[in-house]
Image (cartoon, rainbow, N blue to C red):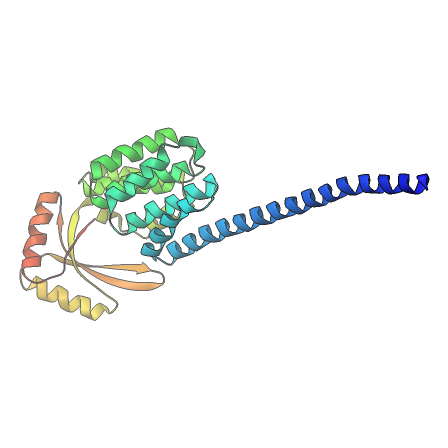
Length: 274
């Protein structure tokens, strides 16, 4: 009897820790399940934001990112989400707002794995807004800070374009030549190979672009009858040929803007190149 009671006591004593162990294991599985579910939700949210951005649904990106602070999201994904937010504002032409978020990311420094992209987009915001001198400063600073960046061909190309916009055609040619020499296999070098080098030396006003060369020739004739100096430039994009009708070859921005205004007043749709 004593032996039985003793065994029973031992069994009771052993059951307690087993029950505790069971509860602990159950809790661990529950916590792991929640954490996994939370991680999957986070990843799903970031993927949704990325897909919306690739679809150019920028309002959706902005709306989705605004909901992220309510989620338990890791820093890496959080930074990437806010990068898509900044780019969405940039695509919509809201440059000040885009720069606000880009500067916040820049302030994080090396904690942001793609900090070089952030700096490029900050410079690009000024370029797209037409603030070329400020953009040039930031692009030059980028080259000094990231001399081995994979994005250097893009930066060099932008610098060349800025020199064109400022009417510094000699500097533009030199920068484009540098791209061909340093990055001969880059997309930018490929684009330059398709460019008429003479175009880099002056401003012009584009008044039309056509698939059909006959339409371009008709517009050229119409403008020549008004004593304009007109040329047709054949370009190719995604396998399609375009015939662009352009007026003049101006050496200063003041001169090209004068003619652009005159052509616009005559009813033509105008774009200044470069």
